[in-house]
Image 1: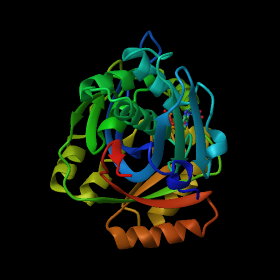
Image 2 (image 1 turned 30 degrees about the vertical axis):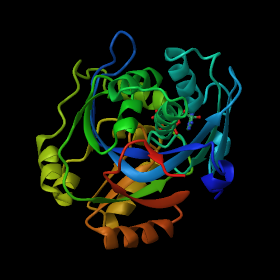
Image 3 (image 1 turned 60 degrees about the vertical axis):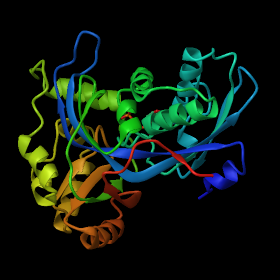
Length: 314
Ligand code: ATP
C-alpha cells in the first residue's frame, strides 16, 4: 500500500490520522419531518486508520488525491468530504477564495462499510487545515462544523467511546476500561446507508418517535472492562434491515459465532460485520478462520477504543 510519506513527502505537509468506528449500540426511532432518524448510539473508535496530509495551495484551489485498496470508490472532486471540510473551515475563517489546499488521503478504513471512513477524512481535514492555516479553533467549533458535514464527524474528531444522541452528533463521553479486540469481516457487496434506513422504515412502520435507550448493561460492561458483558448487550436496530437487503450477512455472522466470537454485529448500516473476541489470541484465530471461508472480501483486526483525529509528527 502506498505510504502517506510517498504521497505527502518532506516538510510543508501537515499530517493527521483518524480512526474508523463501530457502533456498540445503535437504537433508531421513526424518521422526523426533516427525514432524519433520531438515534441513540454508543460509538467506539477502532485502530483502523486513514492518514491525511495537507499543504498550502494557491488561493481558491482545493484538490484531493486518494490512495489505498478502495481508492477508486472515493470521489476526488468537490464532493469529497475532506475537500468539503477544508472549504467549510476556510469559509468560516478568511474565506474559501482566500485560502487553498492540496489534500492526500491514504485509506485503510473500508469505503461505504458502515465504519465512518468519510467522516474520519472530514475530521482529519478540519484538524489538519486548522493547523496548516494557523487558525485557533476550539473543539466545540470544530464539532459544530463537523456536524454540518455529517452526523458521525463530531465523533471522528473526538474518538474513544461516546454516547451519541440526536443524529448521533450530540456526544457525551462514556467510561470505558480495558481494550476490546475486534475482527472485521468486509463483504464483497455494498449497502447504501439511505437504502438501509428506507428498509428499516418499511420493516418497522410503527417505530417509536424516540429511539429506544441504549442498554444500561452495555454501559456497565464498558465501565467494568468486561468484553463478555459488552458482547451480550451489543445491539443494532438497523441489522434486520441490512440482513433483509443482504441475507448473506446472516451466514457471515453465524460463521463468526461458530469460530470463537463472543458476539457479532453489523457495523452501523453495514455491510461490515464486527465480531468481538474475548482476547487478542482469540481475535487472531477468528480472523484466520474467517479469512479462509471465502465469505468476505477481506478480514481485518482492530482494537478499541482508539483516539480521535490527531496530528502526526513529521
Ligand atoms: P455512512 O454510514 O456515513 O454512509 P460509511 O462509513 O458507510 O458512511 P464512507 O466510507 O464514509 O461509508 O462513504 C460514504 C460515502 O461518502 C460514499 O459514497 C463515498 O464515496 C463518499 N465519500 C466522500 N468523501 C469520502 C472520503 N473522503 N472517503 C470515503 N468516502 C467518501
